[in-house]
Image 1: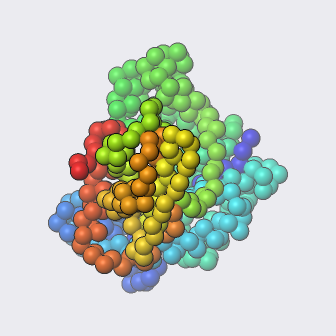
Image 2: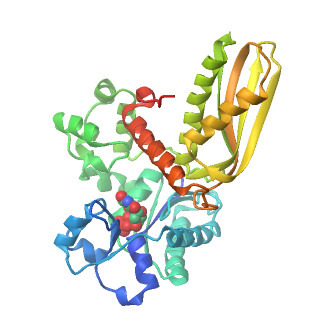
Image 3: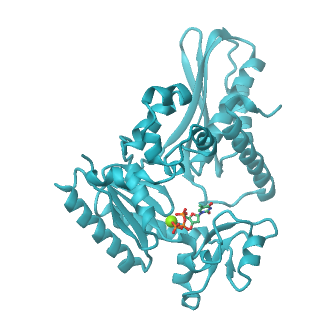
Length: 380
Ligand code: TTP
Ligand code: MG
């Protein structure tokens, strides 16, 4: 059995604002976009009593709670505190997986000898975060990630909840199926149509029927309904480079065709960068010819970018200017390295232009996520 801990800060952004300004104590604080079309990022627990929730339009929130204190987010500051939280967690185990700025999993299986000792350690972390940072969090301890996250959520705010092996069935029975991982609106609707609303009801459906109705996901539903989740805590490893390459079915000589592939690979590399909140200072290409000789060419610049447009034009330029040989190409690759966090060195020569490129990238990423990889590709 594993000993997994999940830590989630309470009303994180709003709590940080209160920490930095004691006048806000006990007041309904709402952090989010303050413009006409802004949404609530988070609301303090006082504000939640007015019915304010994450992702609610800010105008609606203002109607529900006109006397609330509305603040724009200060990500720099949240990130700074997030780092301090990580430092505390790292003093307990290197096996931590940060999920977002305010949330992380810990695997204490190899750190302590028993589940009870893991619970004791988790309690210590709970106290230490409060004492060192002046912020409360909610903690869940359980034999796996799914249950640990569930546990941390059940007693919010400032909660501490343990789910032991023998308690799993009781805890899960009456929970709505939407609390299970991977159950979005579509799956929920489909299960509702099968007469299933709670995890306990889901447990009664035979595995074969779930597999028929949901394919591979059916197996997952079957296991989660029983509180089984083997997914590992994956410690964060800094990414040093990102690259994509393709080997053609048939070697290609037409450089225009090759450049189309370069565009496609650049798109994938850019997307991967943005997903990780990273920017690159070096773009490189790799070319393998039909005789298997392989060359790489790279170009570095001062202003880190995560824009597909930048990566693509640099990769194409490298190909045009540095790969003069008029030979058949077997493989082409595009990569980036010299990576940096999103907010560092954010001094653009042409801030507006860069911003515009990023907005387009962001939109394309969203569309692809929703409709699949091949749904959209920019022209030119
Ligand atoms: P959550 O942990 O989901 O929320 P929370 O910490 O504000 O409140 P809770 O006590 O329920 O844990 O998210 C952490 C932070 O991430 C949150 O303070 C603000 C930010 N966030 C957004 O910016 N947009 C969102 O839609 C959500 C859910 C969170
Ligand atoms: Mg939180």
